[in-house]
Image 1 (spheres, one colour):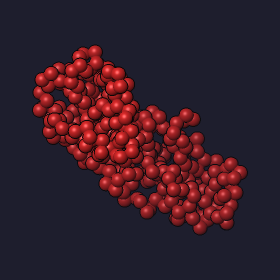
Image 2 (tube, rainbow, N blue to C red; image 1 turned 60 degrees about the vertical axis):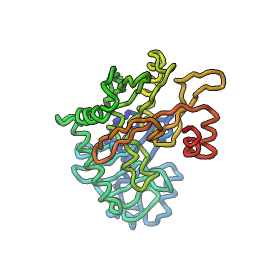
Image 3 (spheres, helix red, strand yellow; image 1 turned 135 degrees about the horizontal axis):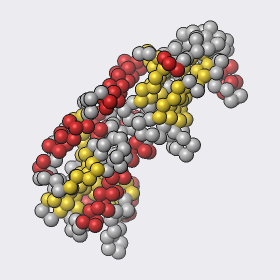
Image 4 (cartoon, rainbow, N blue to C red; image 1 turned 90 degrees about the vertical axis):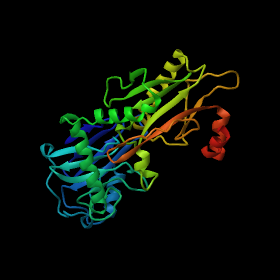
Amino acid sequence: MVVESVSPNGNVQAFVEQDDRVAYFYLWGGADSSFGTRSCWVRNLQPGYANPAQMAEAMQAGRAPMLDRSSCSHPQGARPLTAEHLRIVWFEEGDAAALLEGEEVLAVIPGWSGQSGFHGYARDCLRETPVAWPLACAFDVLSARIQQADAFWQSWDGGHNPWPPLQDALLNAYAPLGQHSNYYAIDGQQWPPKALLRFSVQDKVVLISAGVSLRPQPTVESYFEDPSPKRRTELAICLAPPFAENESVLTVASYISGQAGLPWAHFTWLGAGHTMPCDAFQGGPGREFSFVLLVSSPPGAPTLHMPSFRGDPVSLLWLVPITDSERLLAQEQGSVALMQRLW
């Protein structure tokens, strides 16, 4: 192992391994993680295979395969990688990373690695292969993402902490709710900072998060051509009596605190129309609200002008408690059909 790094979320390890033949870049989510292992060829250290079929033979034998000579920019092999010249830059989502040698990008394992036979991009790869694709085909987009991520991580240590400006912008956006009565820290004194604000609105209680939007959600770009409107979100709920009583409010606050880190813990994303299991509500017989529906603008919700952050708009998702049968309707007919029924 030449160099290694743990993701900002603490649940993925990045590392480079090389022997006397070849160097590979890996992301590993641990033995019990759904993330699995993702790998990308970086360079051959010996002359490449004369026949591409030898790659499959090496894989069947349990060895990390070299590239064939026609597929890489150094057919006779390149010098070994050395730790002092390498660094790993994590993407802001925490599920992807780039390997740099000085300022030169050697390899990238993006968030969409592992799909349709694709694993990662390598600078020295010349054509699409089972272990790497050419970095050149996506360099402009990936290079910008890497630079932005690098600047983001450095800002936390360089006196330009991005949290206070976003915190102020969110508090300003929540001003139509009045003055918050409580500000709960829900980050467990761990990075990144997150809070839950409590507002009293007539006989109701509104809970709304601040700080979830500091990080873009993973995997969104696999679902949308333009992921920007879906990447950053905050969570909110409005509680009417009897759930507006203090004990119930704290139970719901604890639930929302747990969901605030869900996308990065489980490599997924939260968006309008999604449903999530919920154990924070207990109604009368036959009215157990065992799920919540995420909604962008339920009837009666105030208009809050959410800020943008790092070029992305921040969306607000309201949690609407629903029953088992209501969730079944959403599964069978779609969330829009359920919303129409609820409203």
